[in-house]
Image (cartoon, rainbow, N blue to C red; front, side, top):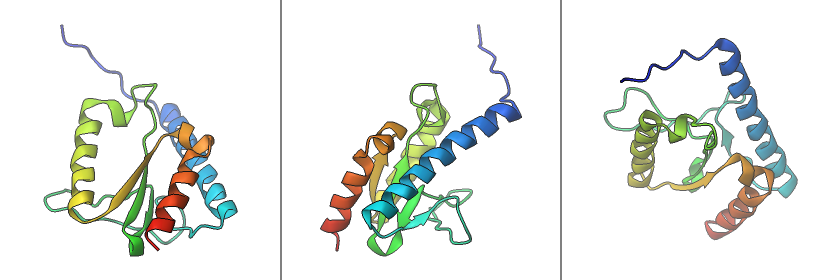
Length: 133
């Protein structure tokens, strides 16, 4: 028997967006406090960074980018709630996107909200930025 999925309500979409923004703001604060180059955040301000992939219907926008250093951060949320990154279609799209990042010469640091919260991401980011200076 095929399982039917319920459409996601606007309230649920708003709640998910608020969670995403919480982690993005926390990472912003940590980057600033550590004195690291700010990079380009995905969803804030006028400056955005897109990566165009051959055959894709739209450009990709990493969660944080340091284009001059070919460094990206991708935050993988929803791992405990069957979020986009862990469901079949989302996982498939992510694999394609990350493969293109590699072909184009980007280094990608993958993160979870827990890794942002406990400081792991900022430690990894500091080490990575030191290596590529």
